[in-house]
Image (cartoon, rainbow, N blue to C red; front, side):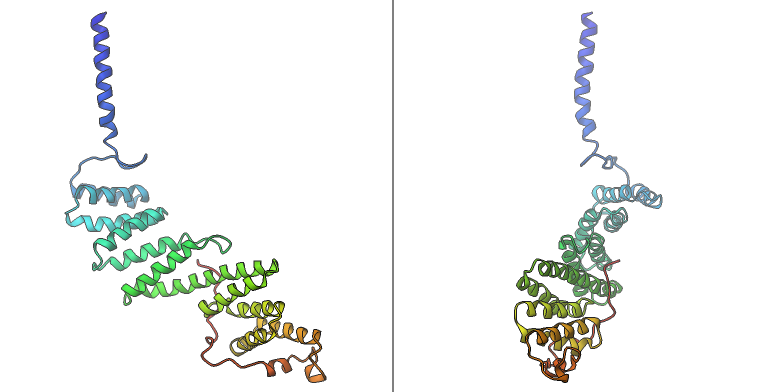
Length: 300
């Protein structure tokens, strides 16, 4: 009996030793790839086979293992890029950003560095929230695409980055418009002018510029800044004549003039906004941009 008890004790002690060793056979959090020493060709082939099967997250971890187990092999650099790419396909965008950023840091002059920077920017881009949400990710995407254009201007990824920047700027302008309209509904006219002014100054070529100018007219009139409102309407007319927001601005100014009793005779009647348009100050040719491209709603 004592011999049996002693055997049980020895088995229990062995289990205590084995358990920590088993725990060391994996790394990181639950679900990570088990550490099994393999030659680089076998490991890379397993990662590629897993990617072809559509298990992108596991493939990314296997590519990480290639770099981890064989950091000085010719496959290590390629595995870094494949890891970032598979994390992106798996929609693990933060992991994709980390892997691609590591590649750019270690291999800034490599021919694939531009693509790594593109993956960073696209990983932020895919996480852009609706204009009603926080836009910090949009700012990060904008910075990443701008960095891509600055560092790799002659690549095909830079050309696409410019298109994406237009969409992001339109999205950021939309956020400012959303906040500005909220301030208007709250009667906080001064705060609304700051938001609309930001759109006019920093997002001039977006689809939101005409409305921003019209909202400036609206807010300035509410603050009693009639001359400022007329200037904004004149800029709107110089760049967007015939636009619905220009017509809306003329209506606001006509109504304001009628309410104050500043209009006399037929030429200045509420039915004749030409008088107000004619007397409005003319902006300089360089004050504001020419008509922007066709409206774009939000990133797709």
